[in-house]
Length: 244
Image (cartoon, rainbow, N blue to C red; front, side, top):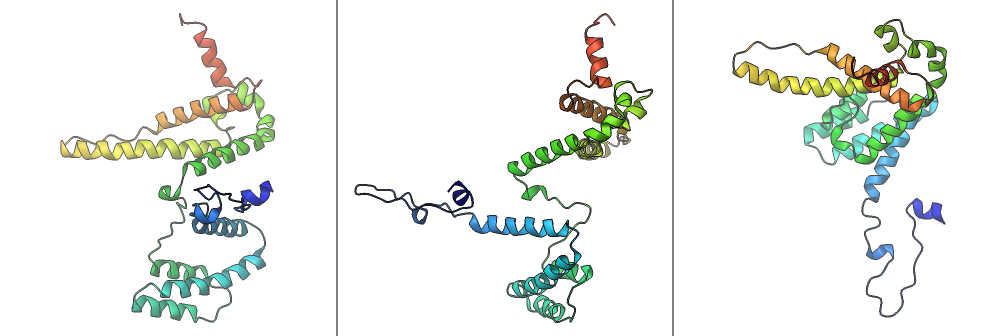
């Protein structure tokens, strides 16, 4: 029963006399976002297929999706675009090439960026929570690899050696986060300095690296209780000796 309702189903509730509001889905907005959610589910399904190793099934899906994209988009576009889409659709190729797919998307004014697949405008708070969950699981999965180099995390001979052991998922996350924030801030400062005819200052990447090191150290210290992670342990030691 719970599974049925979680998937969007509703059990009809008998409405007695004197009840003004019908609790059933016909009179409420239970299915208001069903179309949007259905498309999201299909999108995730396609991504799941794209990330699989089943090439035959991937080709089968792609071969069936391309004509559908052309048919749908020709109904809402100009004559020139529609004729181009129809010509693309008529190409006798069971599995369309990446070039053909990109042409279809460009014609419908969807610019796909291979480097940046996530559009912040399409993300919700739920997505970020899921990103957090995925990142946490990635850290946990990295435990066995970190165990091999545990001594370097606890007693490194240099800061470079210490950082080299960090899980790539955390390094990439904090690099992307901090660099984007600082680069965005720098653009604003650069415009102001240009207006005042002052020389531009380079971005302090060393500062970003230090902050990344700090944040990752704290996360690892939380994730692996009992491990003597070097930086948090050193900072705690200094805090106990305020005269230093």
